Image 1 (cartoon, rainbow, N blue to C red):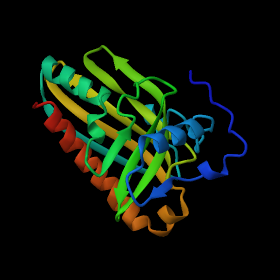
Image 2: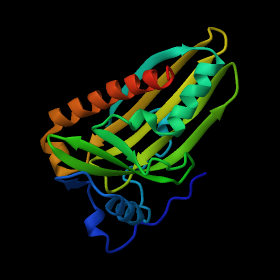
Image 3: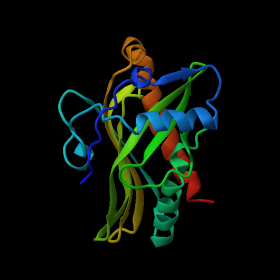
Length: 208
């Protein structure tokens, strides 16, 4: 079970996602993560992507087939561990070697309308199930330095009966940053674009 850290005092600069006119440097990302690591999640329903998303949030799900067989499953699992599903050009996870483990904090840098935004998330749980349907993945939840509030789960599934391998993304969210609320139609288009591009990135990753 994840121990929820206390929210740090005096971190008003970390209350929302941070905008930049140019791509944030490694030093900026490092300092951003260090500040966010001391803060608490921005939503109460931790781990709800593993069961039932809570009311009051928009729920999104994307599911695409990656191929078949154990080799495809292993390739997809390795791609997820490398954060390949975030290697989209306009979105990236930083640092790229952030471990997939409970409590790890990652910054998601996204370029929207010519502006780079840093968004902070912490991994809530990790999935590694070896059953008739083999599952591997993780979920992360939003910290105060994020434009949204909610949780997103990224999962690789291998159905041994059908031999099919799938990439499955489940998220629940609602806008938190004032600009995300004000420009909510753009926020939703950006979320749908990420889901679509992330699925394509995973399909490409298993073909390499």
